Image 1 (cartoon, rainbow, N blue to C red):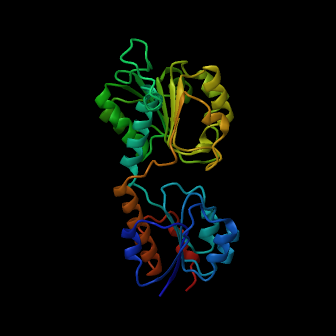
Image 2 (cartoon, rainbow, N blue to C red):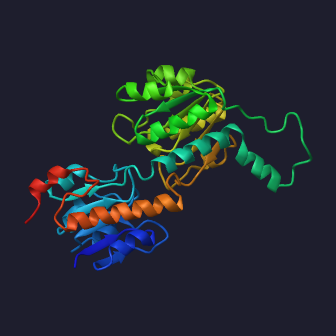
Length: 325
């Protein structure tokens, strides 16, 4: 019987698969502290963690029996994969299963900010509505506009495909060109500068790396149209939040819609005070179907590693060379 530590309670579909093993779950409402993770990972064979959990050399040193670290997320910037590899620990994530769900949320945020849905909801709840008026809460059209997609991975592609139903022109910026996707959607591969200058809506779909940290800063925000909107469902640190606040206050861009934040879970009072930004609490993958699917995928990765196999969603299969027999 293997020992497994899970840093937050997951949907039952995943936990059911792990029955038969000794499972310890952190039940707090907030993420466990670093000290809590270090203490609880001792003598564990598997660790199931979230993006909020920093898993580095110190954690792994205290988890000397770890065979697998399974991230309940597609992103993995919270885990030191190189360190895990040399310790013979497999690292896994949950790609694919959340693609369409996150793309849906990004599209919903775009529509909400463009048509001022959140402002309208607040307006109604405050009983300010006195009847139809020609100038009441005017927003911007989405149909027929130019969409800029920054990062053309699974989610970026899924998001861009939705634009066809709105007859939008699609521009994309990514590490490499995808001619097949261009044929499929009519999208155009452009520089980041060109994308920012021409797009009416700019949506980020990037992993967090040294190259993408603050990829949108003051210089980039000033390149955008004054009528443009910025959407981020990727990583908060991809945007320089101080620069964004300034841009929203001074009207460099029309608005923004965010599901992630630079210092998450903290959100600055400056952002909270702005009317031209829609805020969501990191719910990109938050549908019943997707969260359950992620839990099942995590469990399957763990079980595979515990059985001495390379997990299906393994990010470092080379770790097998360093595993203890």
